[in-house]
Image (tube, rainbow, N blue to C red; front, side):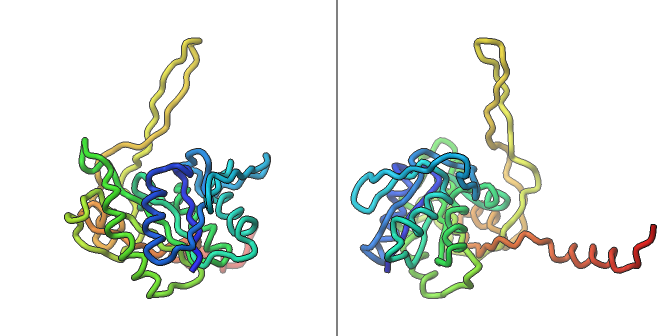
Length: 258
């Protein structure tokens, strides 16, 4: 099996090292094509108005000057064009990608790009900041990642689905198991602005996230990660609100009148 790895934290990120260890639990044919610089929050952005450059950083390791989607596209269609990967893995992201995070996540986007190119794809993320003052528990992905990967590979999923895996902010021995979940939605926005002024008197902003934990329903990715379980969510890119679509369609069934 040939596996292509990517991420949005950059080609030298510690989570990518963890992801490589996870991939090598099933094969030695592992290739890395990832952004040279951090590209968090880029979602499925592709670079259309400037050239994208590739630099080899080592054996089977390449850095790309573009986005996560660019990296997977180049990996599949150029670097590995003569023998395309059987699987795309993205991550392990430094921070959770749950609920509405998934629509902004470059980590999830890299997996979506792989799926779009016809390759089964999985995004892995490591939750953080739930244990204040503690280091990111990368060892949790090392311990649990191979088990999750092998279980997923033994249960093939539809071609239009990507798997979104989130490890909780707990040490391996404290993980409360694995749960297959649905995408949740927080009960309040967590985006924040930090407004500052530069030495010339001009305003500038840092954009980030903050806020309390929500009270999510059972069965959601939010609840699972909050309670210390590994969340596995099958995602797809159909963003249609089907229930409301049906209701809206009834509005336009009546004859048009001036």
